[in-house]
Image 1 (tube, rainbow, N blue to C red):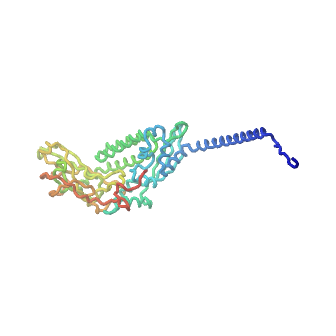
Image 2 (image 1 turned 90 degrees about the vertical axis):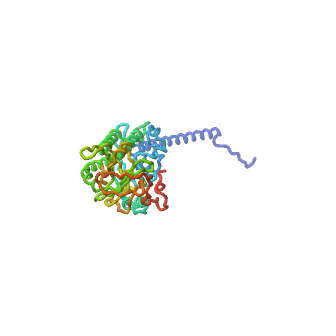
Length: 441
C-alpha cells in the first residue's frame, strides 16, 4: 500500500530471547554474588557477635530487658535439656536470687559491667561487675524505720524508685563453653542445685547455733564453687563468704554473749497443755541489756535428786527468738529483740513422758546471738511480732535469767494470742503483702 511502510525488527525474535536470557543470567550471577558477599559479611559479623564478651553482653542485655527466652536460647544443650524454660525462670544465672514478686524490680535496679573475656581453649570466663541493692541490709533498714501501720512493700517500692537503698558491688562471671563451634552459657544446674541445697542446710545449722558445723558447711560450699565454676558461681561464692565472715564474728563474740545471758530476763514461765494436748512451756522474755539480739535459744533441763546428789536426766533446747539472716522479701518482719523489748514465747516439750512425770523442768538461756547487721535498731513501738500460743490466766513468776523451774498448772487448751504484728498492706492498692510486688513473668 502506498505510503505504508512495513516495520522490520532490527533483531530477530530468537536473538531478542537469547539476549534476554543472557541478561537474566548476568542478573542472576550478580544477585548470587551479592548474596554470597552478604552471607560472608553476615558470617563475619555473626562470628564477632558470638565472641565470649559479645555473647555475655547480649545475654545480660536480654536479661535486663526481661527477654528470658533469648537468655534461655544461649544455654548449653545439656542445660536446656535439664531445665525447661518455665523452670529456668526460677533460677536464671547471674540474676538476683529473690522471689518472683520482687524479681523484676530488683533486676531493674541491678547494673552489670562486662570485662575482658579469659579464653582457654573451648572454655571462656567473662568477668562481670555487679551493682545491686544490698538486700538483707535494705530489708532490715526498712523494717526498722517502718511504723506500726506502714506498708513495707510501699516503702520498699519507693526506695527502689528513688534509688535510696544500700548498694552492694561484687565480682561475678559468665562461664561459656563451645558447642558446635558456637559459644554457649554454662548454667550447670546440677552443681547449682547442690550448692542451693547445701546453703539451706547451712542456714538451718546456723539457727541451731552450732557454729563450728555451720562454718564447716559454708567452707565446704565455697571450696566446691571454686572447683566447679559456672555462670553466677562467683556471685554465690561472694555471698557465702560474706555469711561465713558474719558467722566468724558471732563466734568471736561468744564470751560476750554468755556474759549477756543475765540481761535476758524470763518471766511468767509456766507449763501448760498446748492446743495439740502436749505439755508446753509458755512465758515472756525481756532484753534488759543495751544490744540487739538476733537469736535466743532456751535450754530445758530435768534433774533428779537434790544438792550434791543432783544429776541431769534430760535436756532439750528451743529457739524463742529467730531472726532471718537471708532476704525474705518482706513477707515477715526481720527485727531483732531490741533493748527494753518483751516478747511472748511458747513451745512444746519433747522430753519422754516418764522424764516429765518424775522431774520438773528448769528453764534458762542456753545460747544467743548479737545482731550483726549495720541496719538501725527498730523502736519499741513493735511488740510481740511473732504470734505464739498463749494460754489464758498464766500465773506470774519471779523474773529471772537463771535456771527457773517452770510451774505446772492444770491443763487448759492454749489459745493463740491475738496478733499484734504491724499491718503490712501491699502498696497503694492495699493488697496483702504476699500478693503485691513485681512479677518475673
